[in-house]
Amino acid sequence: MPRTTNEPTEPAEVVGLAEQAAQIRAAREDGRAVPAGRLLGLPELPDGDVWVDIAGAAAITGLQAKTITGYLTKGGPKAAPFPAAHRFLYRLYWPLSEVEAWAQGATSIRR
Image 1 (spheres, rainbow, N blue to C red):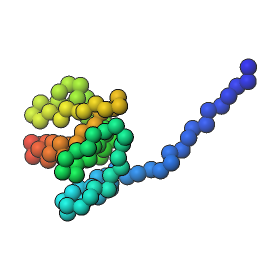
Image 2: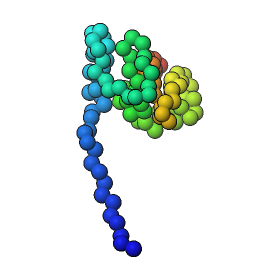
Image 3: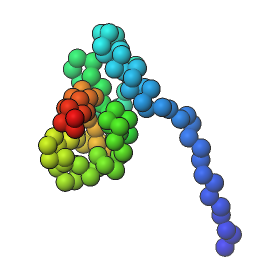
């Protein structure tokens, strides 16, 4: 039987999520349309809000994705539990506004 080799595929594009999150925040503050991609199957959110996945939530909060997953599993942190996720297409999503509100509240608790 011939041996096959698996060649890794390179990503089509590498996107900086922190920069993209900053652009989305600025657009929302100015009342402009949000420059965010749409995913088929996700419902529209009111007031120009957008969905973020675990990578987006990590970029916005400054936490690692595994920390957020741990928070979801254990209901943490105790002082300000991470917002519950919405499950669509077998993945977890949050409205950007919920993650931002949590991040601001969690920052004030840590001070």
